[in-house]
Length: 284
Image (cartoon, rainbow, N blue to C red; front, side, top):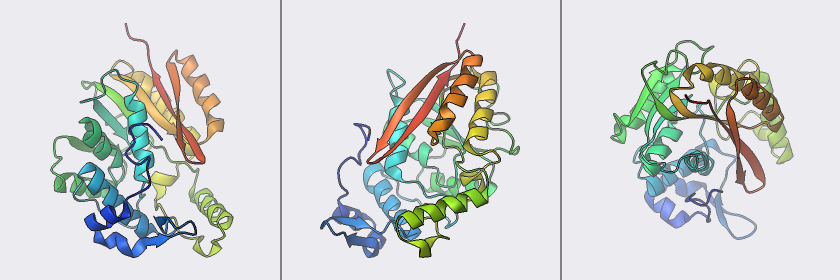
């Protein structure tokens, strides 16, 4: 994890349960005598997130309908710290979140850690409604602003206005090409863990525009790259999570054609590795 990530050490479950008593029923002791939670259960992951957001970031209210994506907080804050390193002074940046989701996680963490002012867009009105409730209940109106992307074929167009400038964009693109692929991926995960009975369960939740998109991650990020060229003088750095390493060469070739500067920023969480792709366009 990033050196600034608050979650590098084991969780203090005593403090977390004291903050969010609902978490206690999900805390178990594993075979190594270490306290943890049952990550197989979506409600356990949501309770842990509420406790982490409250104790570490002062987020007093964070609720999420069952079907929406429940992101792991340590991984999301790692993204925030990693892209913050692109700037000599990362505080008080103006940031655009492509696909803010019902969880509003990047705006929350970016604002709490660095004082970022964030505009977030999403194609789902229901997701935006839930995110707005989180914003209002945490007294963040004005610091975080939401916009509805009415055109599902666009990423930045229509929601990033021509008169605006931003320091940074962030994005967690849909991973799968369709619902069937998402379900197959879930089944493989549970089989590998010996928990086939949970094949219909996604412990981190998620629905269509969050988990799948026609053409998957590759198509979504290529569209983001293509649109970003039109906003190249309004945004200092564009960034996106890239989950599938095989897509990197495709993205880099496209960006080379557009004469963009590209940086690949590694992410590592235990045995799992990932990367963020950052790019920017030359300025006069």
